[in-house]
Length: 102
Image (cartoon, rainbow, N blue to C red):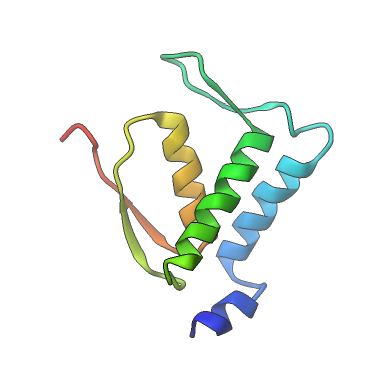
């Protein structure tokens, strides 16, 4: 099942990874802000998010996640959350966001 998922380029996770990756590798977009944390002013560029999504995606696959694997995600830092969430979606996981302050 895992091998079948990895070879299926038509899945939504592959499209998410491809879209983020293309934007991150675009010469005009790589250094542009993708997300800005309104409270702290911290900026995450498309290049940064592309790298982070690729790392999260690979970590999820290395852990044996297959399409639809449920994952609870509780991250208090907004930019770290975005990277983790997109990476898990790119890996095919079903993300369940939890309030880290609850």
